[in-house]
Image (cartoon, rainbow, N blue to C red; front, side, top):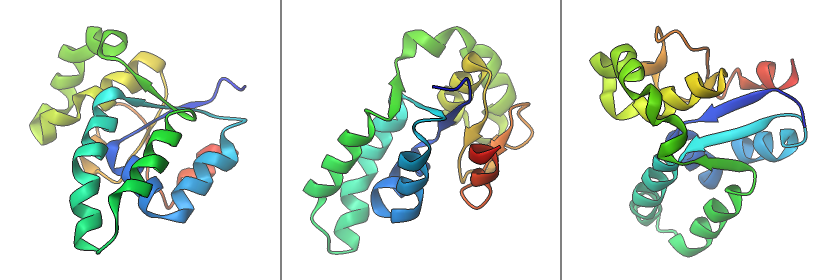
Length: 140
């Protein structure tokens, strides 16, 4: 396992469940990159996926199995791991979206970038990758 790591936002976990490309990027790079997400990102994905799937007329059961399986590759980080950086993370991101502090705090704790589609992370002092560019980081 390499020293390369990245923290995923809930929107990336959701994309990994709903779409093929993001899930493939994660699975195909699991041997060279360590993937993490705060526990609350999984909680958010579990909260929002059923209604997203319902709107598409899709049964949520199989999707939740995929999300559960992702936990073996995208390791959830519990609050105790990143809580120490809550104040600093909030100082950096609260103006845009205070709810995103756990993702930022995880990235700060691990000294690694964030993979997100959320522009709120730009300007927080942590490298931010979007799905259309993350392959550059994963391959680099």
